[in-house]
Amino acid sequence: MLSLRPTSEADLPLLLAWRHNRRVVQYFADGFEIWEHHKRWFASLMPLVAESYVIILDERPVGETHIAWGNGIPDIGLYIGDLSIWGEGIGKEAISLLLANLRARYRGRVTATIHPSNFHSRMLFKGVGFKFSALKDDKYLVFEMSLEEVNGQP
Image 1 (cartoon, helix red, strand yellow):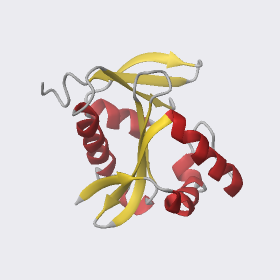
Image 2: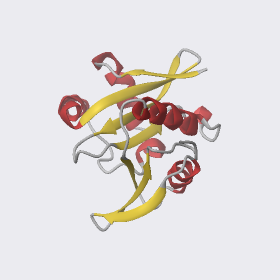
Image 3: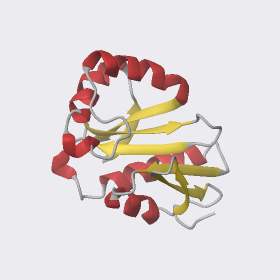
Image 4: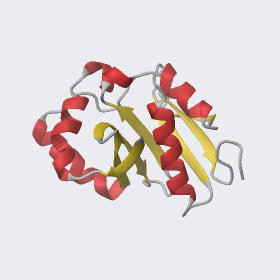
């Protein structure tokens, strides 16, 4: 069973370990980070990322997902840190849970900002109803959807 729980400071060692895996962070804007930088990142993230969740599969943490409200429009993202479950649909299920949570309290546009070479992320977000909408900083692809509908359902 998959679930989400709020990220806490106690999760930092695991998140940092995942963020030091080149395969996990190859599409991140900020790449590798050292521990102190990571702690500062987590503290600075909270005003921008109103919500961060650890993805839990059968009682073990396997990834992270979040909602950033920096521009007033929710921008969501995720990564699966446990490489042994890549390709098993966990990302899609986690994004679906996050969208259901968000949809219960917000109606409007939601975006996902994706590195152009991250084929799997592009397919994941398209698979839950996102469509390409813009190029950000001449580098990242912005996909969006309306939370009036999730997976084609009003």
